[in-house]
Figure 1: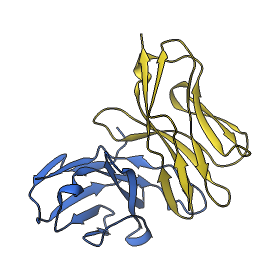
Figure 2 (figure 1 turned 135 degrees about the vertical axis):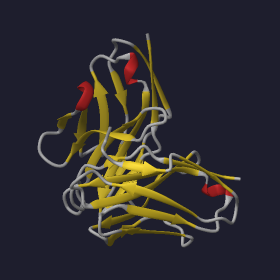
Figure 3 (figure 1 turned 180 degrees about the horizontal axis):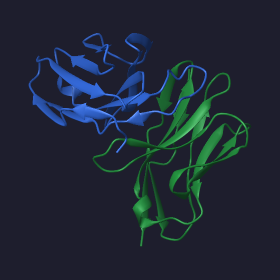
Length: 111
Length: 116
């Protein structure tokens, strides 16, 4: 069965500090991996995706993610968090014509 | 603004009723996806259409159905509504189907359904 896990319901970080939002996946074959962000009362917005190639993927708003095949992880990172980054973040896997989303991680960035 | 529009924004109805949610994809996008987001189940993929044809099915109940019209807008029909159907329903679109390529999806703002 295909699945995506975001082990942390919430991540708290101080503004200016680096942030990491974790994602691990379990799929057969080679997955395509995505990160989306959801602001309150808004739809999901695409941040970045990994299809193939470099394991470090750069995306919107200064975010990047590292694909680690051996650990089946795709953690989202940002070197310096902003208060405006506070939102709900979803990791997703595309496999066999379907998207599978993680349960979401709420990121709180405090001034 | 993603370019994907959904109507209505909010919908309040009673158990046993039927509702229709509407989605207009981004200009040029041929593929439409429907998702349900609820507190207890998270974000669940329901169904995907491409150029009017059903392309993939997820966790969609038999009481739910969808279609994509020639002008590429899509409707999600929910019938015999239950309290547990209360959720946020998202539509997303992409240029082509994601098969084999993981096309980026662009999400609409959602329709919030409350079943009383």
